[in-house]
Length: 443
Ligand code: GLC
Image 1 (spheres, rainbow, N blue to C red):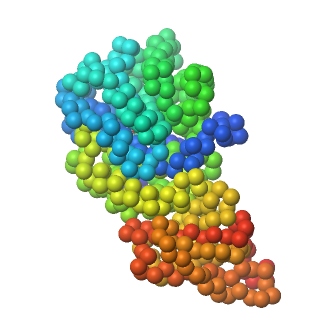
Image 2 (tube, rainbow, N blue to C red):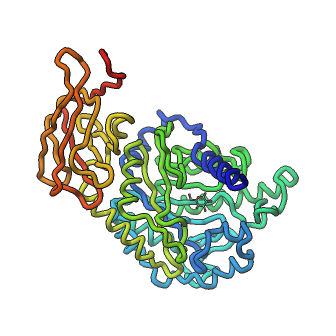
Image 3 (cartoon, helix red, strand yellow):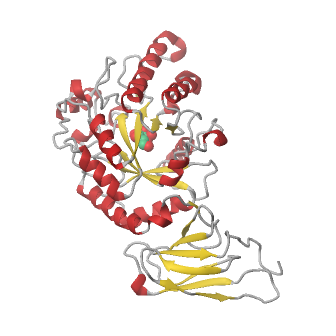
């Protein structure tokens, strides 16, 4: 019973995180959201002092798995000795990702850049002793990869921040508004530093659930960022004042309602470096999740967690490289496409070209042999196995001469054309996609 309750509570929490009520107007942000909609794949990087012990980022002290003092001692071991930002950017590029989001500061308050505010940062407090953001963003720029800044609104280390451990906080905002104002000034100054120094294309806020939009001054935060960089995109964790939704780990089953969304997901079970966690997703699983996300109009933000020296775990390198082979071969079915067929037509993921005269079908699992498409009210001009020169012919069955209802399309995919991970078919149609969505019978 207790387990069930906890499970429901988690679901509810994830739901709240995923369903930020957007207060921005989708029409007014459409143009700036275009690169994001076309990008499909981003890489998330959780890098911080938690990599030293390989424990949960910030939550480990908050949830009292380790004392705060011991958690912060990790600062002494954060060397970034082998940090090669160009190599990181090259790998991200190889994966096929078009944007990358790095933790500029997590809930523990340790900034990865030399903040001018009186607070922890890797330059002053760790043997890394240098700005870790600047060279990374420069390396991304060389590849034309968009730059994202994860920024935790929560700062459990800052003396003027109310929250601290799960069962103790410093004060209540209502009891000491001036103290809260000091925090507001501090965290907004930090955002301003990052914005001025690195001009991120995308802000990835986190932790908005600890305070209201009014307390965070979300409208001001949004306005300040956009006044410096009007095209910047803000994720939805800003109490509704962001531009897109961010379901986390939990995969949406029905299509999310908001125009733009991004599933953030770990490669194993943890965001940061966790050598004890070997529960890695296979490249096939990542590709299945990725195609399902884009099929439903979303993006995937896939996470990696480098170690204290700046090495990316070999399992994660493997996943990114394999993903890259697949995205490269199938790029036309991925980038710049639209969400695919609604449920019921094809048992698998799909995407559409922007003019919807091309349908891309992602063959579920390792399927070959016959696949079925229902309700396709178009003529198929051509079928190509994406990434190959192979063309296939459809077989139409069940077409009744006197009925307007389209027949069922079967396509036989020979074994030799099978992709190692997921085969993709390109269906070129005679005109923009038309679907029959009735219940059969006479109409
Ligand atoms: C959660 C966690 C945080 C993690 C983030 C990534 O909000 O608080 O630790 O960084 O998810 O989406």
